[in-house]
Length: 86
Image (cartoon, rainbow, N blue to C red; front, top):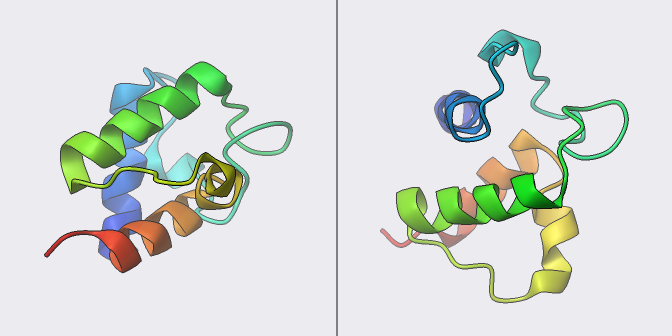
């Protein structure tokens, strides 16, 4: 799980052009959206959906789950672990 979390941090930084951010700056349990976290927005959410589809073969079937899945890097990693096609 720790390895996946670090990989996700790198993918988020690269895909979302977070030039000022390093993986060490990202708290795996901090919110990705809104105040207190990375402060991502809805455009960033679309990018994360693309990362999940491209890199992990995962489609978000229920958009209502998105808020829980995208809460933090840790919740993203847990969702990938539970749903990734082997």
